[in-house]
Image (cartoon, rainbow, N blue to C red):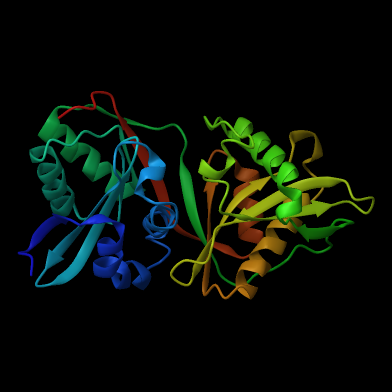
Length: 290
């Protein structure tokens, strides 16, 4: 039995054994932790480079009250924390000599941890420009009328098309990733299931993906329509299709992130039945060493 306080776990299996029930009790708030842990469990710790992933829990009287994880390169993800919990975690990680390049969590948690990390290490936090909102699906309300065409689930025979669309999405959002036959399996895009919206003549015009079912929840990720094809309702149609597929796959909750700088997509998701769960923030640490 561990004493009260923050403790590193002995790898992802130990983390999920100790914190799984806690994470699944609020899967929306813990979507990134559930996804990150499952990715490590499925791919192996060495899939992320020479630096091992790090997982930890905050225990009180034998109960888990909070968690954290760090996947290379040194980005920290947090469950919701109070200022006191954030301060104690920052002190604990600094004392162990860990370095952090950034932190990502709900806005309040990310902010109090960034402030605590600065106090304990001197690292200067800088708020990232991209502001995200996490939505959870209420009652799915497909658009009426739907644009002409149909949704089509992509399979292994469609890998070239999937890689092309994911590459276009990555370029559009400025994601630094190389997508090719050789690199595909190691990207975050490889474990998703994709749906295309096609026009009646079979032309693909929009794509949406969803992560595997984890903890009773599925995250819709990604949604992309090329700029010259927007404004025709394709994104709404394909998002409704993939949301319906998530529910059919057994998801009790369906969540997605949206960039707050894009009012069009946020309004679209709300029309489809998605409701705000929390705002999300990331801070970069300009001096990464404690």
